[in-house]
Length: 347
Image (cartoon, rainbow, N blue to C red; front, side, top):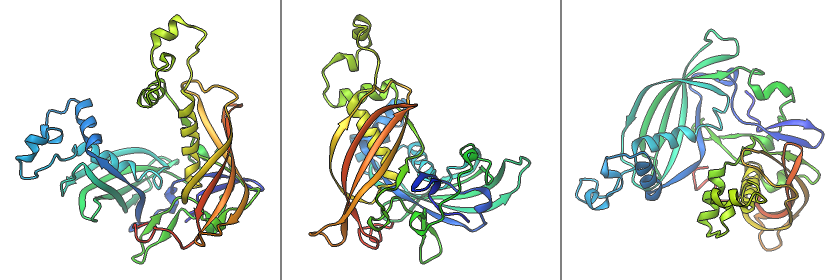
């Protein structure tokens, strides 16, 4: 089984990769998916209202206070979406969801909980398509206290080795311990892990962040509005029509946020972001542009005041096609191997 999170593109150059191929699977394989995700009552309220859900248990607190639950409960389908979305790093190579054979909700979820997913391979079938095999999964959704809140049995198609569209580059997998996507728990389950420890960072190495990310007009508009950006060019199409010199582009602070977020799958063990220098945006990002980011580690040094952490200097660049759209240097405080909150937090 290949459990590496990177391809070796060239000497000192790696690309992030995710997911298990069909040949990596065996019945009984169990995976604890990380990170978990908080669900708030605001998330719950928006999901219910946006979908015109008339079950007022989800958003009428006075009504909910008079039920046996005493608080609003989350929308069932929203929690199912979270539980199934959180498994996507390991099941990234899924071609299709063939069906959900059973879906049981076994405990209530309130709008102030944390959700976690676990999955187990129940059965495998070669199927009738040479590109994929079929896997039957049992997914358990748990709350902050570890109580099972949902059980989902489903069937998916999983690409075979070398058949996923992203495998066409034929780049070899970088099978190094520091690049492992999992560590093994005491009970034999695989626990997903994100990011490199301080000791894993080598000056001169470049990491291509994957997958890419597109930004829509609506995302740009909402980000500007929620940040109190008053200039109407960012959220009023009528204003832009009256001023054609203001071409449609993504709000620049959102671009910075999206590019930085792309880096977190390699730099996910950050204690703190110590700041940016030299941020440049030489070309605008248009709605629908596909952003591809890469980062080069330029320097590493231990922290004199924090023996369990070190400081890395990283240069990040983002492109839309062949256009450089964002570049900056950043200093990151990063946990050393074996340190940090991971064990206590169930990671």
